[in-house]
Every structure is written in C-alpha cells, then in structure tokens.
Picture 1: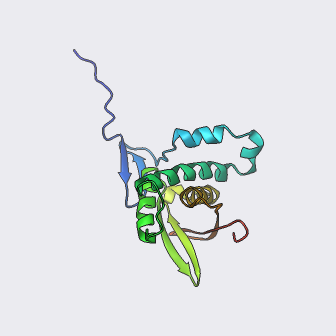
Picture 2: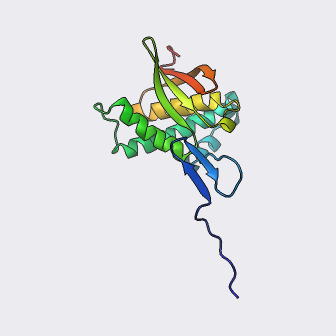
Picture 3: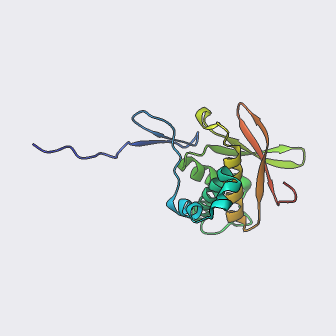
Length: 167
C-alpha cells in the first residue's frame, strides 16, 4: 500500500479581479510576503522598527512589489507608459500578493490612489497601505515618495502620494 503524498495543487486561490489570495480548502485571506522584504525588515534596528511597524513592513513590501512592477514592464519605467498600463501592472502584482486593487481618482487638481481591499482586510491597515504605496512609487520612480490616507469609506481608502513636504 502506498502512502498519500502532499498535493499542493489548488492549495491557494487567486482572485486577480479582487486582488485576493486565500486558502482554497477553507480558511482565511492571505498576504504573500517575499523573503527579501522580510529580510529587509528583520535587518532593521529595533528602534527603527518601533517608530511605525505597519508602515515599515508595508514600505519594504512595497519596494519589492515595485521591483516586480518594473520587471513586468520590461525592466524600466518608461515615460510613454500610460497611467492605465502602469495600474494594470501594479494591480497584477498587488493581487498576487493578496493586497487588493488600486485605481486612480481626481479631486479637483489632485490625483489620488483609491485602494480597495476585501472586507476582512480593512482592519486598521492604513499605515501598512501607506508604506506599500510609498515603497512601490519610490522603487518605480526612483524618487522619495511618501503616501498618506486622506479618506476612507465602505469601498476602501484614498491616498495622496508625493514628496514629504507635500504629504
């Protein structure tokens, strides 16, 4: 008689449209956290981490996601790339990590990022999301971006991103 072997096929379910990652056979929502981002966080001094742990973790994850976005776009952020194309690449990477979906909105002359995550993920993740967004934009543009939440409702949160003086 042969022993059953582990079968990882179908262990996780990706919902790219919703940006969700879950266990397939019941259980909760997941976030995929790359070891390179974890190593960056674990390499920080304790006092650096204590300043704002959710933001710090999000920032390192965002930088890793930014590298994946650049890779998906052919290795560089091209000036001729449309915002829609950038968002397509960004949302694919965010979805594979279980981080939801981002869209662009305007409030007058201000461009905002609208970030929608599943209901069970909205538990005080704003600082984490600020870090992820800042990390992605820093990595993709090579500029010192910061992000801050400016509004939150039942559909998600809105974030303003820019240099530290603006945000």
